[in-house]
View 1 (cartoon, rainbow, N blue to C red):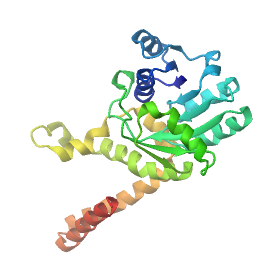
View 2: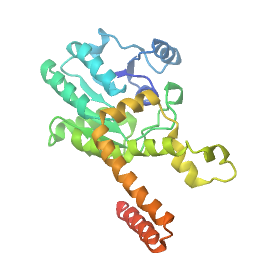
View 3: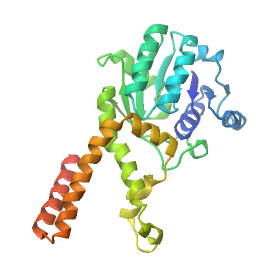
View 4: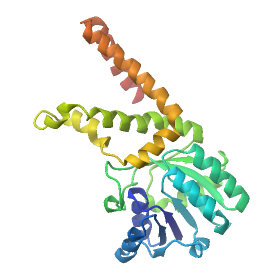
Length: 276
């Protein structure tokens, strides 16, 4: 295949390395053209993605932020071939899917929204690796939910990334769930390490501290955009958490052992149910 990749950060760089390792031709574009040049010298990509060679792409993978993807597609959709499958890997889906489904219908190519459940606490091309997606789940937002042929096409073309599971959903349900399973984790982790005690944790911390703080280090620009784009869902989850934390605080402040026990027990039960 000829694969075009827009955005050569952690996700795009990892995809480029996986497709190149599988023997495909890879074109890439990034706002930082020096990264594209480096990837060509490194042999990970074959050339810069341009309006001329984008027409040759069998697969176009969009791995930038939602607003950057929307802008790119609005500028370049007219140059795509009808045989091209376009897939975005953005962290939120509603705005990207709304715009790109409409552009696909207007210009005759096929667009599918997607979000890989894989990543690191680090960002940037230098941390990318070919096996980043191996064994991970891919959330898929297709234009039609019962199109088995299209889903099979997506699986076949993304095979070099080695996803283990494909989950089909809508853009709205994706954004609602991601507010809880991803965005909340980053907010809580980032806020948690602001305690002055965090500076003295060495020798006093183990797995629980490491697990809770792993995603505190983040790409501020990207997550600011994702949080604000998904603000309604994220605020709903934040309000639930704040209310729950206040219940724990009140039980501890009042010395109410029975209430505290019940709150802790309810949390254990909720965790067990989530693992079924």
